[in-house]
Length: 220
Image (cartoon, rainbow, N blue to C red):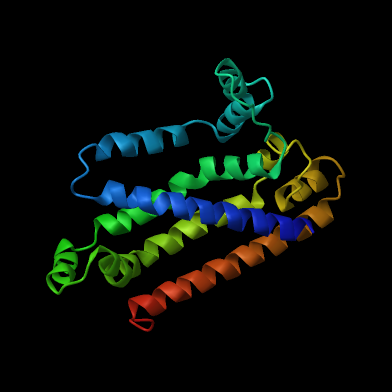
């Protein structure tokens, strides 16, 4: 149950990061976007802060008498109560791991030869067809890298679920932490850790094989 919940929340968070991160990466990679450096700086600077501090910041924002609810109350709007729920856990994952989705996709998109896109437009392709047939296929290596870099830490995190979930939503990372720090069953904790390492290595191997096939033109 813990393993299934961990994979579901990690997959859901990864999907949200992809939906938010891909358009943001396209905006950053656009030659018409003049404030690219400022946006990149705003995206990267929070990553310089301690992971634990960033999570505690959301705990302060989302609590019942936190900044967000105080602001809503001052505006005579209904308050929100998502602290210690799965929504708060997903929000924490998306906030902390979103840059890991944006940066690989942005790197790949910025390296796409603009003449290829211009050629597609000259042949009569509209914006949607150009994105579907040219831009997205060429950006798949960045997408795969982003999914890997978000899903792997999301499925093993324990700080976010413990702080924002209030300990009500135990994930595989919490179970491993508990075995080492509370139950002192180091053998079981080590076994779970090794299983997770094997799963991660298999996933990375599959993704690497997929990238090799794409580079060789096997899927085109």
